[in-house]
Image 1 (cartoon, helix red, strand yellow):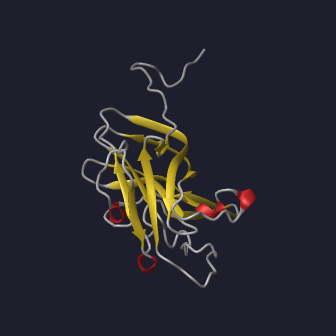
Image 2: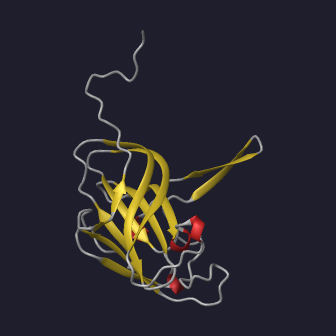
Image 3: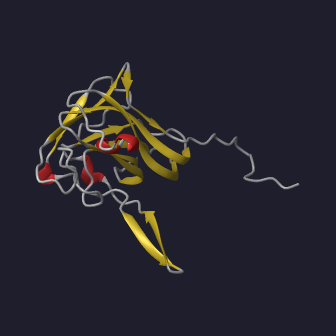
Length: 212
């Protein structure tokens, strides 16, 4: 990982995505449950410290919360990125880190660069050019307790939950592959950010509901 950089770092970072050892799926593995003949798919929060220590994962950990922080709704990552290949994946995870280091996933999402514009698919990248993309992490609800910290991880894969990107633009059935250097920018004019649906704090003594 890149270490516990703050979310307001103003420099560029880049790591290699090694196809022979792709970033594994750990946080938020999907599970299914059959009810009344329907398959209900959800996300399970699992321990996520294994991924943080890899060299192909960018890790940003905020300061510990001094008071509870509640979120409910859609989470998105607004990223400024570049890559030295024609295609790349951007896997973003939002994680709750306890004071003892236990890390549990809250939300995650992935964007394949070539699919960022459905009207122009495949929209291949120009290597080295900077792009602005938005990664949808879906809807979630959670409360970050005092002493806990929010962490954002950005990686180039989450296998086998999602298929590998061969970085050539050929798609998963391609016959060629290459290693890709992916860069996330967070500086003036190209500031990557996380969009959180933060709930307003309820004043003390305010009841949960009122009756007439």
